[in-house]
Image (tube, rainbow, N blue to C red; front, side):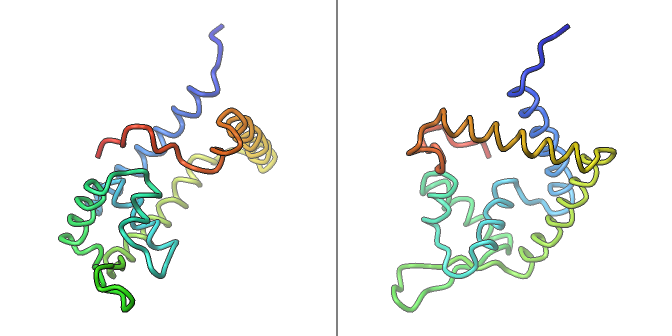
Length: 160
């Protein structure tokens, strides 16, 4: 009998979920996964969100963030607005098109969640979440107390 590995299983599940989500997003919206993450971040942090916030959150270089934002602006997903306190700063604002995408994404997320949890009891899900919390705790302990709640920005950027 083959030994089952948590790391392989989690990676496989994650890849499958991403493929399912990304296929409908790419087909219906022509928005890249990273653009979707940017939209989600800007939506969650409504108010003054700047390019440097995205660079820090996603551990990407200024040039990468700039290129993605230029494409998003060209495609009508965001606009940049000057802020009164500093004319050099431009806050990122979602357009109605990006807001509509965000609403679609949340509907799609709900649909995928229902698909992948179909036939799984509340008790089984509760056990899964308790186990996932323990795995996360163990992982955080391995990373170290200082690094437990931050992204590792020393890894290569993900391919876009």
